Length: 194
Image (cartoon, rainbow, N blue to C red):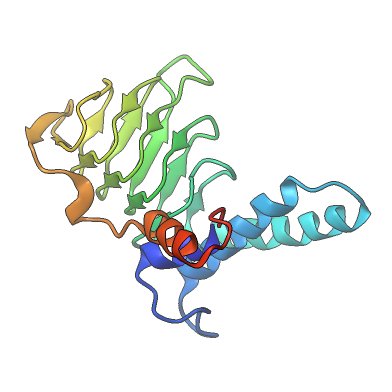
């Protein structure tokens, strides 16, 4: 997943700089934490504690509340700033997300969170609530409030409440890092599971 995330971010270097690249460092920490959450054993417990500590500190520093296992490969976080995601949300490959985004449950519920398809773009300040489903390739405009499902692929949602405002897909706003990685892995014979 790390390589797909790097490609989605458009990073040329294989490692972040010592000073700067805070969001990229956060994504690396998040993916390591997810990896160690799946492992069992004494060493895994130590590693999990270490990565949890780093994840917690970097989350506070950047003002991100992104739980593990929500985003598939190809995550691209555009800027620092508040991002709040419900742990029950599921977001597909190649998602680009901006600051001020809130993805949560409907009022009065605890686990009815949104599910987004692959290749989605979420603009600054967008809000998504409830047990809604968003199709592949959907772009969500800045400050949109999405509280109803959108099964139409490749459209732009905007407004309060959100509705289809354009027949323009998110492909113009994202770099499909997971897709690029899978293709390169298939051509070289490597295993394509980031």
